[in-house]
Amino acid sequence: MSVRWARMVHNLSGILQAGAEGFDRIQPSLELLNTLSKEDWAQIGMVPEVCSSPLPPDAHVTERGFNIYAWTEYLKRAVSRAAELGCKRIAWSEGRSRVLPLEGDISAVKEQLMQFLYMLCEIAGNFDIAILIEPLGPRRTNFLNTLDEVSEFLPLVDKDNLSSMISLRELPDIGVSFSDIDRYFSLISHVQIENPLLEGPQRRAPKKDDGFDYKSFFAALRSAGYDNVITLPADASADSLEYCRALWKSPD
Image (tube, rainbow, N blue to C red; front, side):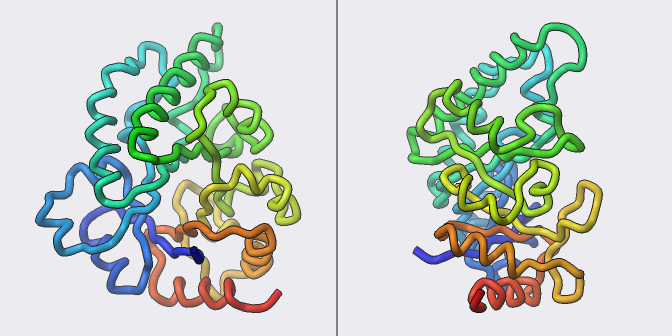
């Protein structure tokens, strides 16, 4: 299967726009999927092969007192709904949801996180869906900041459907160069691409004149054999998609 191009979407109008602009897939949050009606989906006709954010943004797994089991029914419904619509992977890229306390014993909080991921993987595994943890730099979180740390962490949860992913903007902060992609390729089950030269929380789509060498990034992915979904930010247009597709197809 060849690369599929997706766009992050935050509402119904964004989903419809993504289809009109030629994207192959959409990447909504689980929360968004559960707010859309069957009537909404009847007019969409696009597959959310990768979904984002297993929990709503105000749910922080590493807060003391976080009740894992209070979210069980929510996740069962949300993941089942996502599976019906074609979801195969759920990306967890929210750094705030896994920030460890700066004081006190953190071993119990880490255990809480592992228990949550085990439960999430159990639910997702019933639908042949993988859970992906994105390593994030220290500006976004203080836990699982490199692919090496993620690699050491995954066996602790001990679930076959738990893997990882990368975003282009995070590579410098997690210590990964383009030449490292082949070495870490077994961990890269999904790719998100955005302008890495801009600071701040907002993702911005690649543009021809933004001054970054995206071609080298795509070349590294192709060389490693990547053939899954590549997701662009919510502001990506038909022009952004055409630009990235052309770079992907261009010779090294």
